[in-house]
Every structure is written in C-alpha cells, then in structure tokens.
Length: 212
Image (cartoon, rainbow, N blue to C red; front, side):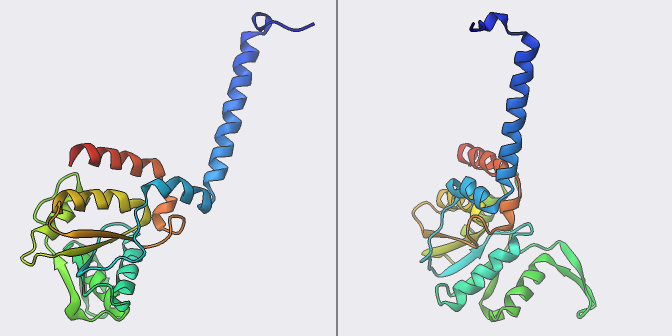
C-alpha cells in the first residue's frame, strides 16, 4: 500500500532534505577542487585575443597573479606584438633587496622581473596613479589614458578571470580613442586566480558594470 505524503514524519522529511543538500554540497566542493572544472566555471569571465598586438602592453597590477601577467607581457614583446610594456608605478615597499642593500618598491621589482626575462629597460615605462578609488582596475585604465603620449592601440595583459572586467574598464575609459585588445596571461584553469573564490569576480564584474 502506497504511503501518502501526509503520513511521512516531518522530521524524516527534513532529515532527508538535509542529507540531499549535504551530499550536493560535497559533490560541488569536490568537483570545484579540480582546475578543469574551475576553468569551466571561470570561462564566462574570460576575454582573450590570442593574436593581440598593439603599440604597448599594459600589465594590470596587484596580487600574486601579477608575475604571470609580467611573463605574458614579456612574451608579447619578444614576439614583436608590442613595442613597449607599461606597468603601474607602485611605490609601496616590496621587501629588502640584498644586492642593492635597500628596500625595493613594487614597481622596481616588476621592472627587474621584466629585465630578467630579456626585456630592455628602455622599453619599460611606468604609469602614475592619479586617483585611488574602490574601482582600482578602472583607476588603472584612467592612468593609462592620462599619459602624455596617446595610443591608437593598447593590449591589456591580465589573468584570465580578470580579463572581462579589465576589458570593460578600458573600453569605457578609452571609448573610441584607441583599439583595446585583451590578452589572458594563462588559460582559465592555469591562473593563480583560478584557486581563489570565483563568485567574488562575478560580483566585482556586476558592480563595475553598474558603477563605472
């Protein structure tokens, strides 16, 4: 004889729902521990032009992913895709340099890193940050647009999960004054940022879309 829903103990019903939810959470967490799965979840955030080229490459600053971006920018230079590389003029201390016997700034570390990868010092330029708001990626785009030299084409180099937000900022700042191409430093499942909470980047993108 079939048991009617009304005859099921409410405690058993809630217990069953709890275990279904618990198992679902476990499955999602285990799945998201794999880089390939996280790469798929990140894919809507990715804007990447594999053939990107322009007058300059601008490397988006900040975070552990900065170094993968610098590597990608140096590759673009050596492939003759860009003429110069621009980095943010970050003057905060980045630790003691035992060779120079002085504290390095973040921008000095970036310049040294590019130089170690064979990029000539005379093609590395810095971008002063004239404004600092909650929208740091937008501020960087404004900094590039305010440079004395005006560019017709800019390649924005950043980490894969950060590409769509960076593209949004540069397009809104430059409008039709320059061609903007975006180059992802790594595949979606290979970035340092792949291992950070993905939902935060989706929230940031939504906020930037509405506010800048």
